[in-house]
Amino acid sequence: MKRESFQHCRRLVVKVGTSSLTHPSGELHLEQMAKLVNELALAHREGREVLLVTSGAIGAGMGKLGLKGRPRTIPEKQACAAVGQSQLMQIYERFFASYGITVGQVLLTRDDLAHRRRFLNARNALRTLLEYRVIPIVNENDTVAVDEIRLGDNDTLSALVASLISAQLLVILSDVEGLYTGDPRQDPNVRLISEVEKLTPEIWALAGGPGSCLGSGGMSTKLEAARIASRSGCPMIIARASLPEVLPRLLAGEEIGTVFWPRERLRERRRWLLFGAQVKGRICVDAGAALALRQEGKSLLPSGIVAVEGDFEAGHVISIVDPEGKEIARGLVNYSAAEVARIMGHQTSEIESLLGCRLYDEVVHRDNLVLQE
Image (cartoon, rainbow, N blue to C red):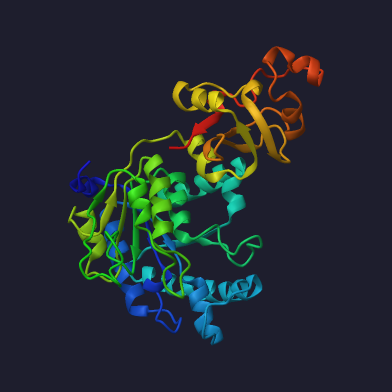
């Protein structure tokens, strides 16, 4: 693939980070928001389907509530999000209306992506909004997220949304130019990496810690987003939000930022298994079973299982790990944790005598299993 192919992109997801939308004090940066909306409106007028994943609700709430530092407790973050989200959407709606564009607010949680039916409902809602030429504005539903205030971060959310709607391009606008060979804040001799073909251990090693005090992400979360996008068949670009006309230049194929090229395109259901579904437990397998899964595309049989962790039921998504504890796959399990514990290490022919019936020969069928890279 070449950057010139972005000129023909019809459906794109743009994510913008908190530090690119707010002043250091936490107040919304209206000039930067106006710039972003102008560039999105231009892409929209060109006939593209555009979806915006925006951060900034907690940061905006901090400014409105007069907080000096990022809140630490979940109730404090929820309060900031409740105050800031309405303010954020009000400004977006006003800015987009000046271009004659209608926007729609979509707030998601991990549960919306973890449950298959809700996942499909979210996908259908977003696609319908795009068909009506509405720009969906997506954010984590921070006000009601009780396990963790975020699905993880909005970098990850943007990649999951790009996968959800089968986007052709994911653009992450941040306060950095892209991925560097080192930390530009400490070493002036580092260089920008223009393209990444594969997320090697060397590339992962370049990721630093968290980003600004207002945001929650760093380069590691952006690489995780690239991993999700890569297996969804979607190119991803990291670029500096403040660059003049950054989005039109990217869509024209100009060589700015860092582009991560996709390696494959998993089918939608497999993408959900790997990235959207909530993992309920783990099954540990021996070296022979790990090899059969990785290289031969086999189903998981009870004979190769050595341990079971968690309290899952048949139909739940589980993680499959090798003898070193490394996750090698995820899949829909055919038996409960208690049943797997009883049949593990035994042959398929023994399942009926151990459980009283044999509904399946496989603990996880290969059609319901997705390998990690």
